[in-house]
Image (cartoon, rainbow, N blue to C red; front, side, top):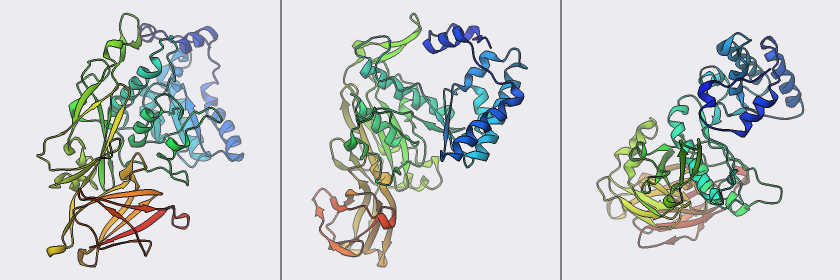
Length: 433
């Protein structure tokens, strides 16, 4: 079937993929056979042990709808067939979607699709040949995902796309994926893996310390331009069970060029930029189960890159920082509580495993025991557990056995934990005051 892009799309930007579709046309199954198309593919894959699939370029239905009842009727037929097949073959929602940012998808496709791409592809280099594109394109990708999620998150869980763990900006991407609240996956070539980086994202059993919400820009970024105004840091917030997290990214250096109809680099913007972080940047009240954390009188804030731990009150001056181009900082923020009583009273806040990028996501539970003189922290993963403690505990138990720990005057309390395979990776750590 000939592909006919609308005048609006044709006048937006040049795109090699669209050019090829127009040249070759699209092979279209008749609308009344759309369900058979999907079910025949999916039932075969499910029978072979495949547990999920991806649907891509589904917006292209708009190109071929003229002779098939129009855009709405064609979309209804295809999304109905897709939804029924996914429900039958892949446990209801074993699917991710890509290149689906059209209204038809949001109103018709999300019956079964729970997760969809929020931005452009991960480009490991600039296809137009800009040698700096290996850097500035990565910031543009993050900004697209963060701001698109403001709309898309009401329908689906935003997916920030794959990246390559051995890319020049791999850590930059990994930090964003770690707190985006969606999945992450890599498109590494075989043998080209940075396992040290991947272990900061993934538990040994393949699960991830996923945030509760989906990442969104902080309020002070909403009407700024973190791509090429030479001054704005992209800040995104998210929530964990016992705290929040702020990711700060220097994405300056690229943006849309209306004269060239494409995204291009602005080298004069690829510069260090400064910003500030405060606990109120986290939208604590976006979930009922985290809203009480907005009322804390004090917060412990851990900086992932510099490994600093500081205390902040709601009225404290913000933390100021400067980021080099294509660099980042993650701020784990945990409300401080009082444990124990009398002379033993301690101020306490769980940070999590500092060897994981989303440290706060590793905390599974926190409970005061025996009248408040003991704090039990359940933590998933392996590595170094960090909590803030205003006083040194008398002793520390890990899975019932006394263990060594480190405590510094600034309140850093650290103990090592190992992966507990028989307990889904969870260690029970008790601090006794």
